[in-house]
Amino acid sequence: GDSVTQTEGQVALSEEDFLTIHCNYSASGYPTLFWYVQYPGEGPQLLFRASRDKEKGSSRGFEATYDKGTTSFHLRKASVQESDSAVYYCALSNYGSSGNKLIFGIGTLLSVKP
Amino acid sequence: EAAVTQSPRNKVTVTGGNVTLSCRQTNSHNYMYWYRQDTGHGLRLIHYSYGAGNLQIGDVPDGYKATRTTQEDFFLLLELASPSQTSLYFCASRTGDEQYFGPGTRLTVL
Image (cartoon, rainbow over all chains, first blue to last red; front, side, top):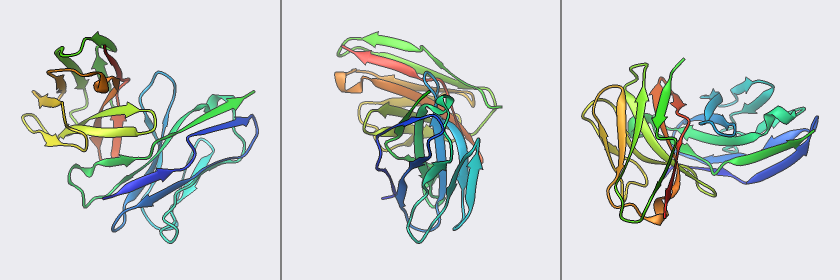
């Protein structure tokens, strides 16, 4: 079945550091890829999506590029802020699946120190 | 913007207890979902529905029932709660390919 792998369970950075969170996927066809962000005490919310090879999604200074060749959708930000501290989930939706189900990675807890 | 609310926000019950978690969305989305969130597992789909009276089985359905009574309301039922069901539960609704999540219900089964 379809799956999403996030290799970093936790990332600790200082403000203005560069962020990379790795996301690799396994799916047939052309899934849509997502990054969701979850702030403390809230539900996840969509950060951005990409649905085609080489498409770049971006929002709030975060970006990721859909790479079908390496089956990756790595999240990057050039300069993180304390307010970016949250859990980040990579997810995919394969329109061949019933209900357009989202398959989530395990999530990455980002902690940014001032 | 989509609004999804959940109640209660926190619930404590004992093993074997009967629990109902409620979810309401106010934007008339067809699809609604129930997830559980656990460290090391991320979000896992329990059940989902594409309209009133419809129920579809998710990826981790054992021990859970669900019912969609109206377009707005989706309930998750634990009829014999077990400690393994201690978790943070999220409801979501969907329009297009974006899911909108509620604030979650933290359930503790003692």
